[in-house]
Length: 460
Ligand code: ARG
Image 1 (cartoon, rainbow, N blue to C red):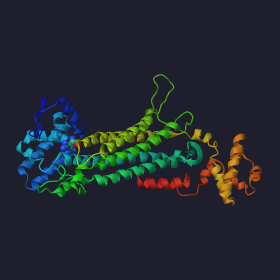
Image 2 (image 1 turned 180 degrees about the vertical axis):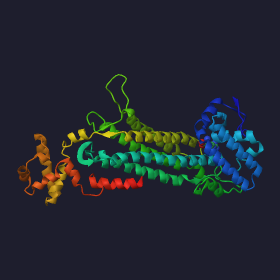
Image 3 (image 1 turned 135 degrees about the vertical axis):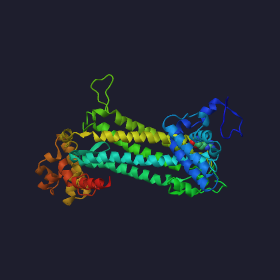
Image 4 (image 1 turned 135 degrees about the horizontal axis):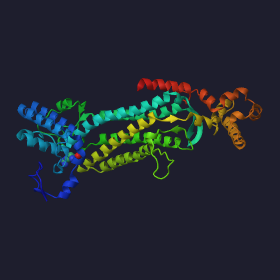
């Protein structure tokens, strides 16, 4: 048994099982909140001073000591002792050691329950901003590639992983910019619910002391204060939302990674991932493996795990705070660190990837990418679409047997299938012509790519 000197030691017997000390602590994780914990404490102390619950001189001592503690932690000189359980108690203990009486007043009207909620909200505000910038970085890298000469490459678009219709590489890349834009919007939206100050909610029911909650919120730059003290200490929705958004963004990166793992294979050879983002094999000397992309794909699984852990941890919790909630930090920090790293990696990979125009072009007429275009040509000539679909479908069947492309079929043969076909049909055939003929907004053609490029250049 170890002697303790926690703040509630008068209620509990003096000894604690060493196992329990290890088991209950969160200091090893939440020590990274120290800056926010200290900023929150200084604001709280300032408000207490204005409310005449702490003297000017005590406030000066508290602020001075907390600033010193922050510097000690910055410099790696602070001793984190697990017997203090968490960052809140570790800092408070150090403060009391430095200031005595004054420090003992800091926790007036406050509980670790509203304190931890405050710290996480402050931490999240900063990390949300970083996250949004990192996503923007990937978007910009994709945009740059899409706007380069490589964006003009005509490539096969796929559905069901089967060749479908031709598209410009630029349009393909900008599809990912769209996904990431929605992620940014989700993170920005999450910010609104994060940026509300829970301090003053106390343990669960607020306080009988004349605390000025709005003043604390103002000092810390929050947009408003939470409305309900019980909700304030039992709410982790903002954490779940944030982690959900990391999972969603991770899923988008994972899809890009999966595409590019396939595109970088010998069989496709659509792109070349830079050597810097590949690894070799310990046995097979020829290997260039896209491990960074595989890890982006793999880590997405961990992000889902973080989200599932959080949702499951919360689902059975009675009002209000329960210690289960301490486990949120592991999931939150993991998710933030992991996605930030994946985004940085993704930006670097995208910035160094080259499309193989020669290889893509060589096989472009395989797979009848122009079949839909032929059917639409027939529609223009007055053939009902279902009939046009049928005519084209049987022609494709024939051509497949004969090893011909649609553009290689002579006009008379085409006219035997449908007398409405004219020699202008060839303008609708072959992948390049198809791309040139796309008419609808947002389609895979040049004009549409140009419009999107202009939009994104303005927006990013
Ligand atoms: N370390 C705790 C957590 O992260 C702080 C709140 C503890 N509150 C309590 N009443 N035990 O959730």
